[in-house]
Length: 279
Image (tube, rainbow, N blue to C red; front, side, top):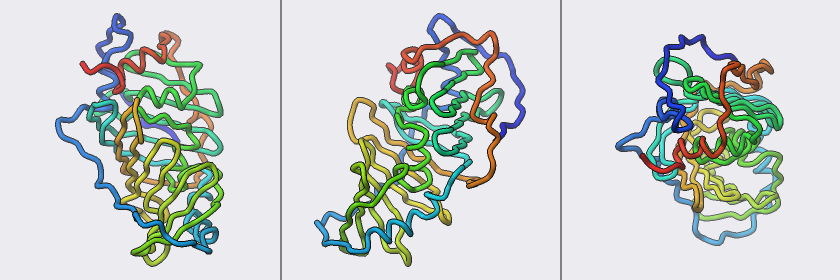
């Protein structure tokens, strides 16, 4: 996965505040009116034993379990830390734990580039010439967006598997064509019979996930909500240009850091992001 060549106009920078708001706002523009997709109404009845849960889970997750790599464009809108946000990312993933997220700006360099291969994560803010090193991709992504998820977890959610390497351990049948399947590790996915069984929502370790719209074998719209404070997040991602199991250049999961880039701490990044104090 490569990024298109971009011009590099001079950007206003402010070192005194740690990081200028300009680069961040180019990636995530504050909105006066934004809303997430409508919540999917899950079954409320206790249900009855579902003997075929293992087979249904295997069939419903065939595509996402087979997704060794995925690239896509993500249109984001919603709220994080009390701020309404919107933006567009170019994303790439490769199992087991490689990821690249690039915030597309209307002009000039990207708002940020976050890349990780294994445990080696780097965030570059090209407009500010600042770099974050020595932190996990999970912590960096949390400071940027409030979505504190590891690359493997984010890939699993975006492809519809809910969590990486999960095993179905139980299931219930519900009214109106619904079923719920419990996964090893504590997550629960909710499926609805729509001809075939389709994953419609899930609950896992602090997050609610809805899949309102699917495009073929993969979700097109994903709504992600945090279940509790401190980082209140309600974000909807719309995926387009999805490609699965294409070879990705290993260089995509690294960042070319300019030699004059100054270090940025995770605390400074968090303060400048949506979880910082409103300006």
